[in-house]
Image 1: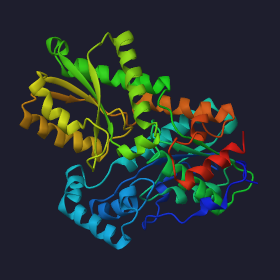
Image 2: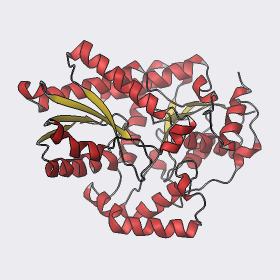
Image 3: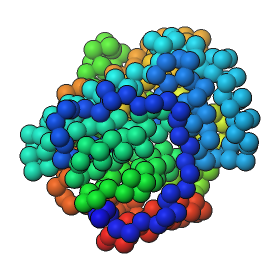
Amino acid sequence: MIKFGKWSSGLLRTANKPLMLYNRAFFSSSREPKTAILMMNLGGPKRSKDAAQFMYNMFTDPQTVPIFKRVPNFLVKKFCERRAAKGVMQKYDEIGGGTPLYDWTDKQGKALCEELDKMSPETAPHKHYTAFRYSSPNVSEAVEQAVKDGVKNLVGFSQYPQYSCSTTNSSIQEFHRSVEKVKPKDVKVSVIDRWYQNQKYVDVLARLLAKDFNKKFTKEEQKTALILFTAHSLPQSFVDKGDSYPYEIYNTAQAVMKVLKEKYHIENPYRVVWQSRIGAKWLSPSLTDTIKKLPKKGWQNVIVSPLGFTSDHIETLHELDIEMMEDAEKAGLKNVKRAQSLNAYPDFIDALADIANRHLNNGEYTSKQLLLRCPFCTNPECDRLRKAYESIY
C-alpha cells in the first residue's frame, strides 16, 4: 500500500513534461537506499540552446504562469523560441553556457545524504535525486527511479525555503501525480514544503551576509550601508488569493536581521525587494527600480543578499552580478556589493540535514500549513491534494 492515504484519481491529470531524458548521474549513491530525498526545484536549461524548451515547459504550466492558460501551446512555443533567441540564450552563454543548478543540486544532495546517514541511521542509507519541475531530470523521472531503487521512504524536499503556490505547490502536485502513476508498495511518501524559519538556515544567511559586509565595506562605509534582501517576484494575483510567499520572505529577512544584530552587531536599515518579474502587476518594489532610485535618496553603499535563492543560477549570476551592476553604474550608485549565495557552504548543508532529519523523525507527512488552502483559491488540484492529506490526520 502507499502510506499517504487514499489519493484522488484527479491527481493523475496530464501534466507538461520536459522532452529531455534524465541522466542517472544526478541520482546519488550506488548503495541500495532506504530513504529517497528528492531535491525539488525549478530547474533550468543545461545548455543555452535548451532555454526555449525550458521556458515552454514552465509557461505551459497554468499553476506557475496563469497568463498563458488560454493561449494555444503552439503560440506559447513560438513566443519562447523568440524570447530565447532575442536574449535569454545569450544570458546563459554569459554565465557559462547553461544553468549551474544541476551541479549545485548534486553537490548539495550528496553532502546532505552523507550527513543524514550519520544523524539518522534508522532511515539510512539515504540517497538524493535531482527532481526539477521544468527540465530533466524531472520530478516524474526521480520518483520512478527512487521506486525502482526499492526505497521505503520517499521524501519530496522542496528547495524553495519559502512556500508559494506558483512554485512549491506545482512541484508537490507533480510529485504526487508521479507517485500515483508508479503505485509503490509499502512506501511512506511525505513532503518538506517550507523551512523559512529554520534557525540553522537563518544563521547561515546571516553569517554569509556579515562576512561580506565586513569584508567588502570599510568601517566608514559600513556606517551608511543599506541592506537589500532580494527574492523572486510573484504576480499580485497570487498574493490577492492568499499566497503566503511574501509573508515568509519578510519573516526570514526579519529573522536574519535579528541574528545580525545579536551576533554580529550589524543594525543597518534594510528592505526586501523583488526581482525577475515579467509583468506590471507583480510584487514591488522591484530590484531594478530600487537600484535606480537609491542614489537620488542619498544612498551609495549597498549590499544585496539573495535571500530567496539557495544556489547560484541565472537570477544571481546574471541579474545581480551583471544586470544589477550595470544599472547601478548608470544610476550613479558607486558602491554596491553582492553577498555570496548558499550553494554548498558547509553550514548550509548542516541546515538542510537538520531540516530533513527533523522531518524524518517527527512522523509528519507534511506541515500543517500545507493543509490550509489560500482563502480565494479556485484551483481544483489544490483542493484534491489537501483533502488527500487531511485524510491522514
